[in-house]
Length: 355
Image (tube, rainbow, N blue to C red; front, side, top):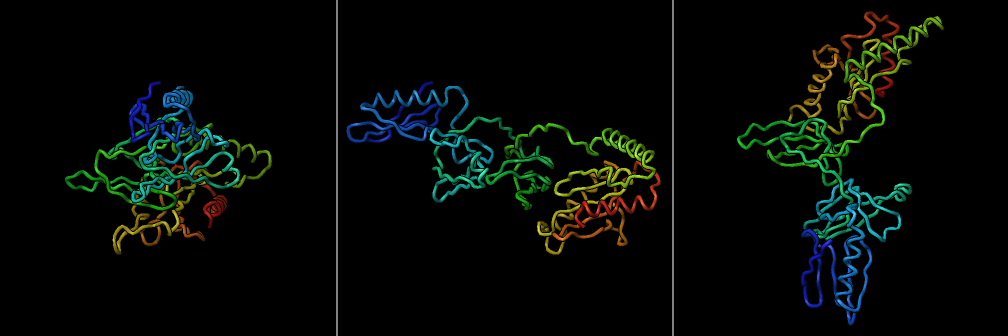
Protein backbone atom coordinates (compact mmCIF):
# COMPACT_ATOMS: atom_id res chain seq x y z
CA UNK A 1 0.00 0.00 0.00
CA UNK A 2 1.12 3.56 -0.62
CA UNK A 3 0.78 6.48 1.78
CA UNK A 4 1.15 10.09 0.68
CA UNK A 5 2.47 12.39 3.41
CA UNK A 6 1.55 16.07 3.63
CA UNK A 7 2.95 18.80 5.86
CA UNK A 8 0.18 19.98 8.17
CA UNK A 9 1.95 22.57 10.36
CA UNK A 10 5.29 23.06 12.04
CA UNK A 11 6.36 19.66 13.35
CA UNK A 12 3.16 17.99 12.13
CA UNK A 13 2.34 15.75 9.14
CA UNK A 14 -0.60 13.67 7.96
CA UNK A 15 -0.84 10.80 5.47
CA UNK A 16 -3.58 9.97 2.97
CA UNK A 17 -4.53 6.79 1.14
CA UNK A 18 -6.86 7.07 -1.87
CA UNK A 19 -7.43 10.69 -0.86
CA UNK A 20 -8.57 9.78 2.69
CA UNK A 21 -6.69 10.87 5.79
CA UNK A 22 -5.37 7.71 7.40
CA UNK A 23 -2.35 8.56 9.62
CA UNK A 24 -0.59 11.42 11.43
CA UNK A 25 2.91 12.20 12.70
CA UNK A 26 3.69 14.93 15.24
CA UNK A 27 6.91 15.96 16.92
CA UNK A 28 6.84 15.92 20.72
CA UNK A 29 10.09 17.03 22.25
CA UNK A 30 12.92 14.91 20.93
CA UNK A 31 10.62 12.14 19.64
CA UNK A 32 7.89 11.74 17.03
CA UNK A 33 4.40 10.41 17.78
CA UNK A 34 2.19 8.70 15.21
CA UNK A 35 -1.42 7.53 14.89
CA UNK A 36 -3.35 5.39 12.39
CA UNK A 37 -7.13 5.49 11.91
CA UNK A 38 -8.73 2.48 13.59
CA UNK A 39 -5.59 1.49 15.48
CA UNK A 40 -6.79 3.03 18.74
CA UNK A 41 -3.35 3.74 20.22
CA UNK A 42 -0.35 5.81 19.23
CA UNK A 43 3.28 4.87 18.62
CA UNK A 44 6.58 6.74 18.84
CA UNK A 45 9.93 6.88 17.07
CA UNK A 46 13.16 8.82 17.37
CA UNK A 47 12.97 10.04 13.78
CA UNK A 48 10.13 11.06 11.46
CA UNK A 49 11.10 8.27 9.05
CA UNK A 50 10.70 5.73 11.88
CA UNK A 51 7.14 6.88 12.58
CA UNK A 52 6.27 6.89 8.87
CA UNK A 53 7.56 3.30 8.55
CA UNK A 54 5.54 2.18 11.60
CA UNK A 55 2.44 3.90 10.21
CA UNK A 56 2.80 2.06 6.90
CA UNK A 57 3.14 -1.31 8.69
CA UNK A 58 -0.02 -0.70 10.71
CA UNK A 59 -1.95 0.46 7.64
CA UNK A 60 -0.91 -2.59 5.64
CA UNK A 61 -1.87 -4.88 8.55
CA UNK A 62 -5.27 -3.27 9.10
CA UNK A 63 -6.36 -2.42 5.55
CA UNK A 64 -4.13 -4.52 3.33
CA UNK A 65 -6.44 -7.56 3.13
CA UNK A 66 -9.52 -5.50 2.24
CA UNK A 67 -11.41 -6.56 5.38
CA UNK A 68 -11.62 -2.93 6.51
CA UNK A 69 -11.90 0.39 4.73
CA UNK A 70 -11.94 4.11 5.57
CA UNK A 71 -15.31 5.84 5.73
CA UNK A 72 -16.33 9.43 6.62
CA UNK A 73 -17.96 9.59 10.06
CA UNK A 74 -20.62 12.04 8.85
CA UNK A 75 -21.97 9.39 6.45
CA UNK A 76 -22.18 6.51 8.94
CA UNK A 77 -25.47 4.59 8.91
CA UNK A 78 -27.03 2.14 11.40
CA UNK A 79 -26.01 -1.40 10.59
CA UNK A 80 -22.42 -0.55 9.67
CA UNK A 81 -19.67 -2.32 11.63
CA UNK A 82 -16.70 -0.39 13.05
CA UNK A 83 -13.38 -1.77 14.28
CA UNK A 84 -10.55 -0.59 16.53
CA UNK A 85 -7.54 -2.50 17.87
CA UNK A 86 -8.14 -1.30 21.44
CA UNK A 87 -11.74 -2.59 21.58
CA UNK A 88 -11.33 -5.76 23.62
CA UNK A 89 -14.97 -6.79 23.11
CA UNK A 90 -14.58 -7.05 19.32
CA UNK A 91 -16.25 -5.23 16.46
CA UNK A 92 -19.09 -2.80 17.17
CA UNK A 93 -22.25 -2.22 15.16
CA UNK A 94 -23.68 1.27 14.61
CA UNK A 95 -27.21 1.50 16.08
CA UNK A 96 -27.86 5.25 15.64
CA UNK A 97 -26.13 8.36 14.28
CA UNK A 98 -26.69 12.02 15.19
CA UNK A 99 -24.86 14.76 13.25
CA UNK A 100 -24.45 18.07 15.11
CA UNK A 101 -23.72 20.64 12.41
CA UNK A 102 -23.19 23.42 14.97
CA UNK A 103 -20.56 21.49 16.93
CA UNK A 104 -19.29 19.80 13.74
CA UNK A 105 -19.44 16.45 15.50
CA UNK A 106 -21.02 13.04 14.93
CA UNK A 107 -22.49 11.24 17.95
CA UNK A 108 -22.69 7.49 17.37
CA UNK A 109 -24.32 4.79 19.46
CA UNK A 110 -22.63 1.40 19.09
CA UNK A 111 -23.28 -2.11 20.32
CA UNK A 112 -21.12 -5.21 20.60
CA UNK A 113 -21.92 -8.81 21.38
CA UNK A 114 -21.10 -8.31 25.07
CA UNK A 115 -22.99 -4.99 25.36
CA UNK A 116 -26.10 -6.52 23.78
CA UNK A 117 -26.01 -9.34 26.33
CA UNK A 118 -25.83 -6.76 29.13
CA UNK A 119 -28.50 -4.55 27.54
CA UNK A 120 -26.60 -1.29 26.99
CA UNK A 121 -25.13 0.73 24.14
CA UNK A 122 -21.69 2.29 23.71
CA UNK A 123 -21.32 5.98 22.78
CA UNK A 124 -18.59 7.57 20.72
CA UNK A 125 -18.12 11.03 19.18
CA UNK A 126 -16.23 11.76 15.98
CA UNK A 127 -15.42 14.98 14.16
CA UNK A 128 -17.59 15.58 11.06
CA UNK A 129 -14.58 15.39 8.73
CA UNK A 130 -12.99 12.41 10.48
CA UNK A 131 -12.58 9.02 8.83
CA UNK A 132 -13.26 5.79 10.69
CA UNK A 133 -12.43 2.11 10.24
CA UNK A 134 -15.47 0.35 8.72
CA UNK A 135 -16.06 -3.16 7.42
CA UNK A 136 -16.95 -2.90 3.69
CA UNK A 137 -20.51 -3.76 2.77
CA UNK A 138 -22.51 -3.98 -0.42
CA UNK A 139 -24.52 -0.78 -0.68
CA UNK A 140 -27.52 -0.57 -2.99
CA UNK A 141 -28.54 2.95 -3.97
CA UNK A 142 -32.10 3.55 -5.21
CA UNK A 143 -33.39 6.71 -6.87
CA UNK A 144 -36.50 8.42 -5.53
CA UNK A 145 -38.54 7.77 -8.68
CA UNK A 146 -37.87 4.04 -8.33
CA UNK A 147 -39.04 3.79 -4.72
CA UNK A 148 -41.97 1.46 -4.06
CA UNK A 149 -44.19 0.56 -1.15
CA UNK A 150 -42.41 -1.80 1.22
CA UNK A 151 -38.88 -0.62 0.39
CA UNK A 152 -36.63 -0.60 3.47
CA UNK A 153 -34.21 2.36 3.56
CA UNK A 154 -31.48 3.61 5.88
CA UNK A 155 -32.05 7.01 7.47
CA UNK A 156 -29.74 8.81 9.88
CA UNK A 157 -31.46 7.36 12.96
CA UNK A 158 -32.21 3.89 11.64
CA UNK A 159 -34.31 1.84 9.23
CA UNK A 160 -37.55 3.14 7.72
CA UNK A 161 -40.18 1.47 5.55
CA UNK A 162 -41.76 3.23 2.55
CA UNK A 163 -45.57 3.08 2.83
CA UNK A 164 -46.53 5.33 -0.11
CA UNK A 165 -44.96 7.23 -3.03
CA UNK A 166 -47.11 9.84 -4.77
CA UNK A 167 -46.28 12.40 -7.47
CA UNK A 168 -47.09 15.98 -6.46
CA UNK A 169 -48.09 16.79 -10.02
CA UNK A 170 -45.97 19.94 -10.30
CA UNK A 171 -43.62 20.84 -13.11
CA UNK A 172 -40.63 19.94 -10.94
CA UNK A 173 -41.60 16.28 -10.85
CA UNK A 174 -41.44 16.17 -7.06
CA UNK A 175 -42.61 13.13 -5.12
CA UNK A 176 -44.25 12.76 -1.72
CA UNK A 177 -42.73 9.79 0.12
CA UNK A 178 -44.45 8.49 3.27
CA UNK A 179 -42.37 6.30 5.58
CA UNK A 180 -42.94 4.31 8.74
CA UNK A 181 -40.01 4.90 11.09
CA UNK A 182 -39.83 3.69 14.71
CA UNK A 183 -43.61 3.28 14.81
CA UNK A 184 -44.33 6.78 13.45
CA UNK A 185 -45.27 7.99 9.99
CA UNK A 186 -43.46 10.85 8.30
CA UNK A 187 -43.85 12.46 4.90
CA UNK A 188 -41.01 14.06 2.93
CA UNK A 189 -40.98 15.80 -0.43
CA UNK A 190 -38.09 14.84 -2.72
CA UNK A 191 -36.92 15.64 -6.22
CA UNK A 192 -36.47 12.98 -8.92
CA UNK A 193 -32.90 11.82 -8.88
CA UNK A 194 -32.62 11.95 -5.08
CA UNK A 195 -30.95 8.79 -3.82
CA UNK A 196 -31.47 6.54 -0.81
CA UNK A 197 -29.53 3.59 0.56
CA UNK A 198 -31.56 0.39 0.58
CA UNK A 199 -31.36 -1.98 3.55
CA UNK A 200 -29.85 -5.30 2.38
CA UNK A 201 -32.36 -8.14 2.29
CA UNK A 202 -31.74 -10.97 4.73
CA UNK A 203 -32.15 -14.44 3.29
CA UNK A 204 -34.67 -16.43 5.28
CA UNK A 205 -33.81 -20.01 6.22
CA UNK A 206 -37.29 -21.18 5.27
CA UNK A 207 -39.93 -19.31 3.27
CA UNK A 208 -43.16 -18.48 5.06
CA UNK A 209 -46.19 -19.79 3.19
CA UNK A 210 -48.87 -17.13 2.75
CA UNK A 211 -51.66 -16.21 0.36
CA UNK A 212 -49.18 -14.16 -1.69
CA UNK A 213 -48.75 -17.18 -3.95
CA UNK A 214 -52.17 -18.64 -4.84
CA UNK A 215 -50.59 -21.96 -5.75
CA UNK A 216 -48.95 -22.26 -2.34
CA UNK A 217 -52.14 -21.15 -0.60
CA UNK A 218 -54.20 -23.75 -2.48
CA UNK A 219 -51.68 -26.52 -1.76
CA UNK A 220 -51.52 -25.58 1.91
CA UNK A 221 -55.31 -25.41 2.20
CA UNK A 222 -55.70 -28.81 0.56
CA UNK A 223 -53.14 -30.32 2.93
CA UNK A 224 -55.00 -28.84 5.90
CA UNK A 225 -58.31 -30.14 4.55
CA UNK A 226 -56.83 -33.64 4.20
CA UNK A 227 -55.52 -33.45 7.75
CA UNK A 228 -58.93 -32.32 9.02
CA UNK A 229 -60.72 -35.15 7.19
CA UNK A 230 -58.28 -37.68 8.62
CA UNK A 231 -58.91 -36.44 12.14
CA UNK A 232 -62.67 -36.45 11.54
CA UNK A 233 -62.59 -40.09 10.47
CA UNK A 234 -60.48 -41.09 13.46
CA UNK A 235 -62.05 -38.99 16.22
CA UNK A 236 -65.58 -38.89 14.87
CA UNK A 237 -65.81 -35.11 15.18
CA UNK A 238 -64.70 -32.08 13.23
CA UNK A 239 -61.64 -30.12 14.28
CA UNK A 240 -62.27 -26.45 15.23
CA UNK A 241 -61.01 -24.13 12.47
CA UNK A 242 -58.44 -22.49 14.76
CA UNK A 243 -56.71 -25.83 15.12
CA UNK A 244 -55.95 -25.73 11.42
CA UNK A 245 -54.07 -22.44 11.80
CA UNK A 246 -54.75 -18.95 10.51
CA UNK A 247 -53.10 -17.33 7.51
CA UNK A 248 -51.37 -14.03 8.31
CA UNK A 249 -50.76 -11.50 5.52
CA UNK A 250 -48.38 -8.62 6.24
CA UNK A 251 -49.67 -5.46 4.55
CA UNK A 252 -47.61 -2.99 6.55
CA UNK A 253 -48.72 -1.04 8.44
CA UNK A 254 -51.89 -3.22 8.40
CA UNK A 255 -52.04 -6.96 9.14
CA UNK A 256 -54.71 -9.30 7.77
CA UNK A 257 -55.58 -12.63 9.41
CA UNK A 258 -57.76 -14.98 7.36
CA UNK A 259 -59.19 -18.46 7.67
CA UNK A 260 -59.14 -19.89 4.17
CA UNK A 261 -61.17 -22.90 5.30
CA UNK A 262 -64.18 -21.03 6.71
CA UNK A 263 -63.75 -17.99 4.44
CA UNK A 264 -63.55 -15.49 7.30
CA UNK A 265 -60.95 -12.85 8.19
CA UNK A 266 -60.05 -9.62 9.95
CA UNK A 267 -57.85 -6.65 9.09
CA UNK A 268 -55.97 -5.07 12.01
CA UNK A 269 -55.00 -1.40 11.63
CA UNK A 270 -52.10 0.40 13.35
CA UNK A 271 -52.86 2.17 16.66
CA UNK A 272 -54.80 5.43 16.37
CA UNK A 273 -51.89 7.17 18.11
CA UNK A 274 -49.79 6.60 15.00
CA UNK A 275 -52.31 8.21 12.63
CA UNK A 276 -51.72 11.60 10.99
CA UNK A 277 -54.16 14.17 9.57
CA UNK A 278 -53.47 14.84 5.90
CA UNK A 279 -55.67 17.95 5.87
CA UNK A 280 -57.60 19.93 8.43
CA UNK A 281 -60.93 18.23 9.03
CA UNK A 282 -60.24 15.78 6.21
CA UNK A 283 -58.97 12.24 5.78
CA UNK A 284 -56.11 10.80 7.79
CA UNK A 285 -53.07 8.82 6.68
CA UNK A 286 -54.64 5.55 7.84
CA UNK A 287 -57.77 6.32 5.81
CA UNK A 288 -55.65 6.81 2.69
CA UNK A 289 -53.65 3.64 3.29
CA UNK A 290 -56.77 1.59 4.09
CA UNK A 291 -58.18 1.89 0.58
CA UNK A 292 -54.91 0.71 -0.93
CA UNK A 293 -54.75 -2.14 1.57
CA UNK A 294 -58.22 -3.37 0.52
CA UNK A 295 -57.11 -3.15 -3.12
CA UNK A 296 -54.08 -5.35 -2.39
CA UNK A 297 -56.25 -7.83 -0.49
CA UNK A 298 -58.72 -7.97 -3.36
CA UNK A 299 -55.99 -9.24 -5.66
CA UNK A 300 -55.59 -12.16 -3.21
CA UNK A 301 -59.31 -12.97 -3.21
CA UNK A 302 -59.99 -11.32 0.15
CA UNK A 303 -62.68 -8.61 0.41
CA UNK A 304 -63.98 -6.36 3.22
CA UNK A 305 -67.45 -6.97 4.61
CA UNK A 306 -69.77 -4.02 4.05
CA UNK A 307 -71.15 -2.27 7.13
CA UNK A 308 -74.52 -0.58 7.62
CA UNK A 309 -73.09 2.80 6.59
CA UNK A 310 -71.82 1.37 3.30
CA UNK A 311 -68.21 1.40 4.46
CA UNK A 312 -66.10 -1.51 5.70
CA UNK A 313 -67.65 -3.36 8.64
CA UNK A 314 -65.89 -2.60 11.94
CA UNK A 315 -65.46 -5.74 14.03
CA UNK A 316 -64.17 -3.82 17.05
CA UNK A 317 -61.32 -1.76 18.55
CA UNK A 318 -58.49 -3.26 20.61
CA UNK A 319 -57.35 -1.91 23.96
CA UNK A 320 -54.39 -0.13 22.33
CA UNK A 321 -56.63 1.63 19.79
CA UNK A 322 -56.33 -0.62 16.72
CA UNK A 323 -59.43 -0.81 14.52
CA UNK A 324 -60.33 -4.35 13.41
CA UNK A 325 -62.34 -4.70 10.18
CA UNK A 326 -64.24 -7.80 9.03
CA UNK A 327 -63.09 -9.65 5.90
CA UNK A 328 -64.24 -12.62 3.87
CA UNK A 329 -62.43 -14.93 1.45
CA UNK A 330 -64.28 -14.95 -1.86
CA UNK A 331 -63.06 -18.44 -2.79
CA UNK A 332 -63.00 -20.33 0.52
CA UNK A 333 -62.09 -23.99 0.71
CA UNK A 334 -65.42 -24.83 2.38
CA UNK A 335 -68.15 -23.63 0.04
CA UNK A 336 -70.95 -23.69 2.63
CA UNK A 337 -69.48 -23.76 6.16
CA UNK A 338 -72.01 -24.40 8.92
CA UNK A 339 -72.91 -21.79 11.54
CA UNK A 340 -70.84 -23.38 14.31
CA UNK A 341 -67.73 -23.49 12.15
CA UNK A 342 -68.08 -19.82 11.15
CA UNK A 343 -68.76 -18.77 14.74
CA UNK A 344 -65.70 -20.65 16.01
CA UNK A 345 -63.56 -19.16 13.23
CA UNK A 346 -64.69 -15.60 13.96
CA UNK A 347 -64.02 -16.03 17.67
CA UNK A 348 -60.52 -17.35 16.92
CA UNK A 349 -59.88 -14.41 14.59
CA UNK A 350 -61.06 -11.92 17.22
CA UNK A 351 -58.69 -13.40 19.76
CA UNK A 352 -55.80 -13.36 17.27
CA UNK A 353 -56.54 -9.66 16.55
CA UNK A 354 -56.53 -8.79 20.26
CA UNK A 355 -60.27 -8.19 20.72
